[in-house]
Length: 295
Image (cartoon, rainbow, N blue to C red):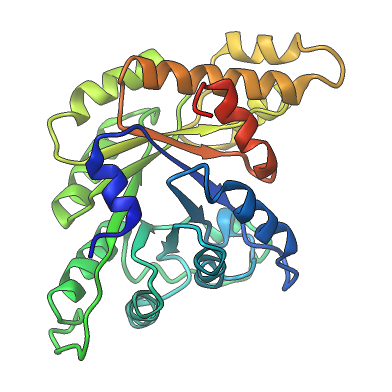
């Protein structure tokens, strides 16, 4: 049976997903609060997998928590930390517990995180992981052996529409679709006109696209991302707008800007939905959705 998220994608509605980050430790109260807050407002929640290579509670455990709380989880899996044996094993465990959405990621460099001495694996890349999901759905593992009980996933991947140059991203994008990706969540987009150009290209493929939107909390954050996050470019006019916010009002301004962008994406039918990344401020996702006219 298709997952609730898959049904939402196929329904033609404007789909909304958001991220919930597992804790740095075993105290899951804050994450559980965020899940309770969002489960009836968004179509699904991505559970991040050691985001930015920072060690946290496992995404698989977080996805189980979302499921237990009555939410719809999207399990994020990076190829950075596990070889094909561990990835396939985790997919089987997830499927056995009713987790049926997965976002396949290659993963950030360990040098960005808090365990710089860790050894990265990268046995597979994200398109190969998508292909592995499809192989397992046919009742086989990656070595061609029979599985006693298969899996079924709504599988997705990511793309960076503002990468410069864009051509390598487009090649990866097509490889992920050829491997079987059903949905694509993008890296943060702030230049809507530039995103429209990407969508003009992407619309030739049978895949659902959710535009990634990251909440800005200060002008300094925007400048930091421009300098340090590959494929993210916040236009100067948005930086100026954030900088002009009254003292103590930057978060409110960021919510307003994010809501405005989502409303434009929805009203102009630019893509199939949005993926909201509040990065540690998940409690304001409902405010963003209200600002966008979604609640």
